[in-house]
Image (cartoon, rainbow, N blue to C red; front, side, top):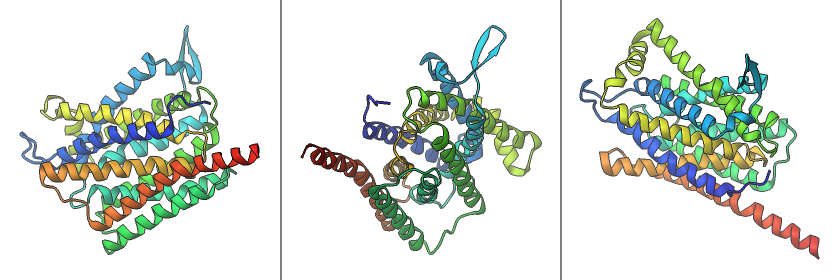
Length: 339
């Protein structure tokens, strides 16, 4: 499949839309609400942001015509999108990713670059495993970029003297990694082909399962009233719609949807996961660093530490390597062929 827009441009757009997504989430998690008298928790922000992101996704699928590329089933006279066995499983994995990402930005005392390094680093480490298991060739520049990312992760964790995270934050990182591993493996198996329409069909089939499941899980926790978390989710499902935080949460849901579109375009590029995953993960981490500085200047939140900046710098180096090395290799191959 020939791409009209270069992958680097898509990655840049992904980064630019991710920055306000992070700023909005962290701002609501640190600035007191007028009624509650305290900042919102991640569980209070999640329900409405997922619901509104889901609405935006459905509207896009319909008006952009992406639903036509998906697997279809007949419901009376209608033909409606319906996932295959594999995309249904991927949708379940996506549900883990959908509620762990915004939740990760809300932990007190845990910086955005640090939690992003952990969550992105885990996924980067499993990318070559998925490639090797699926029989894909992993080129030298992908291994080199992976090594840069791993070094950045090690430096940042070592500077903190270990993980030092609250239990819920650790659970969030684990759930995110498990969900992303399953999603990445299924993507590689069924849709990283470059065939026209494969990206659209995968996006539609995955999201029509992942978003409702994520919302349903949160609703079940709220319904059964599992401790303080149930009460927070109850506010996020009911009281949020009359809150003055509805507008920023709506903007959060919109940016979440846009980011998900650009993310799938990057990850389903036909090239190996050890190329695509570092590109997407590094861009999201860079967005986190930029957002951290914006929040530091506007809300007085802590700036990224030196170790976090070194780690982020190594990831930026990985982006440059992944962008330049394949082009140089292609030019060399062309020159040899013409010689």
